Length: 215
Image (cartoon, rainbow, N blue to C red; front, side, top):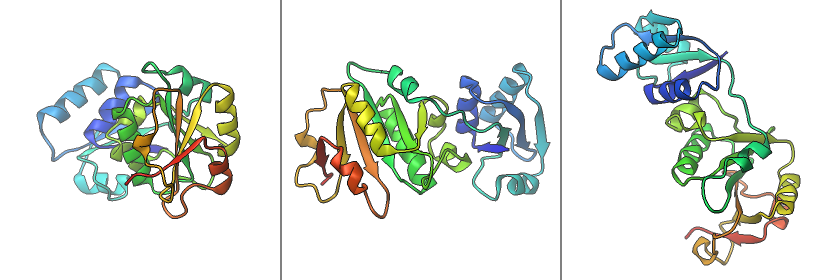
């Protein structure tokens, strides 16, 4: 069972239809136009809508901020790397790669920012890293519904593969002497961000064509 909570997150997931919905739960006590539109969309799509007391909805969501809406769905279907690259949104490809990011709030914020920056998609590790959860979906404001996200077993090997596809690898490193604005991003680019505590792994750094910092 996978949970999506919050009006924006559930609405975006309904638009893309990339998940199987079991049902959508609504707080009995809440009444407003946005919520009514969501209920109408669920009914139009033939999805069961359950009305619950706020306390019951809190227990279902695990006491997180849910805005009176919780959807029970299948887990997010991750994309293949080929799908991420094929989702090219501009003249050049831009893929964001996360090297061991662990905080789901940070992952959600990066997905939201990547979507706003017109990145083609994200690549994240399969192990020892945050995956797409209800918290991530909520923090992303629903961007997880339409940003392709691939999971890989080895980030360094993925960087090698991207180089064969004419990508330049740019790693963010707080100790790098060059700043991000010194790089001309008019190229197919894979932007690599490290974990909250340790930054980029040394092996990942060695595969980067540029290491830059953000002042």
